[in-house]
Length: 115
Image (cartoon, rainbow, N blue to C red):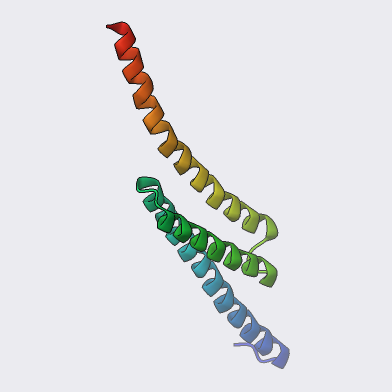
């Protein structure tokens, strides 16, 4: 343990900041996981209610990421990358969902042309 008063204070401040950073990072990860689950549920069964839940989860995750960046817990680029990851995940699942019916229709037309 340090003997100098300023060193003791710096240790206390570092511990306080460590706990704050840990809680922000944990909250960001939790909100992102909840968002990913909501998107997968929406992709499996697209309804208006599930779409609203996806939008709600996205706004909560964006808000927490922005607050973490503002407090200095996350770097600006790290926050941008996390938000980009959320949007990419959403678009990827919507494309997969929309391509599946088209591919089955095209294979049926190819089968009918072959016979």
